[in-house]
Length: 506
Image (cartoon, rainbow, N blue to C red; front, side):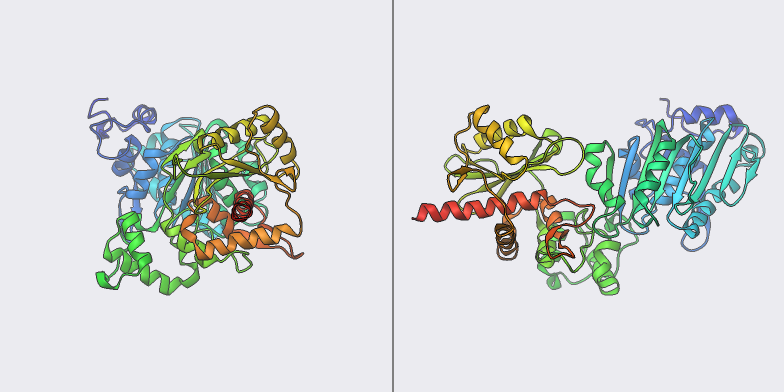
């Protein structure tokens, strides 16, 4: 692409020129300053209102650039508050609407007030377009409180609230933005399903929200994004350049602050802002000003495990050294030739819905979590995968929960995979979880989280621990909309390890 192709030419501001740009929006020429042509066009054409109340040309910020660099056809965005993402999605979709004939854009806000605010942003884009566009090829036949129609392009831009029962019905939508999905009223999953039914096969979808607790539609969409093909975007608060305050003294830093500085290269001015927001928002600071995609989903007070210990470990938990199987297998500590290991397995039935099959690799001597697999597999596929992991980890002992699907998996590991190192309980293959043994294994895991939090590596395991709650009937398990498969696999693994070590001592 020539360096001049993406620059607006006043003498050529017409329908043909806009359509030409519509074909280039996602192009990323090397000569271009910024992520792509869409960003360059937005900065040349669109106006926004600044926080001081002035109308100025749009200038793409760090969060907006990051989204443009990595977006796909289907996207889900987890973010801190007031990062400018809603404004950018409006800008991106407005450009697509006025440069691609036959486009219908639909933005859905969580409240009517928010829908009106988004529409004011879009109307400002329209009002400040050059006269030769606004009065000719982009003249409107309708521009009310919820819809703008461009008859020359046969395109329209609509903004509605999630509370409108018929939102999206009867439409074929090319661009769908679901804003603050975690706070939608009614049944968000049902509303979202209806909107997705209206989305064209090649349409662009963006789900976006700040977090609002563990469970619910947005939480579930975020957790399952890798399996459903959605591109995940996480934007922590420090990506917003305004979030700075008076720099703190270096000798006043807490161990937690030192860890987050080392992990994310924050400045002392950013730590000053962090202290300020923690004082103002108290327990909600992690939710409103997200720092990682696990702890920002706040747990309530009915968590079985010690939440403070979990959240402290989430700050310092390391990234995996290696991932396999499309990210389903994470490895933090590869096998060491003279060490013994255990592989604890909580099997599920397989398929793309429901529970995960989980395998946790634990070092026998220290109890360190070395690797973790979690995926929608079952039967022979799971048996072969577990046997392969156990063989790699020095022919580790395999402990499979034999409840439900486990008995079949155990038989396949023994008879088809011919794996000899299978844990036996009272002479029978596998581990049996009962109403009596379950509280004990959960208690052991809780003690480990409090006494030796550094032995747990998986942020996803820690996130499951946070959403593992006491139910109204007195039982324990995953909060609605969450999973506890990693919790049970690790709990069984630690209990079996303790039992095996006790046998060795005698």
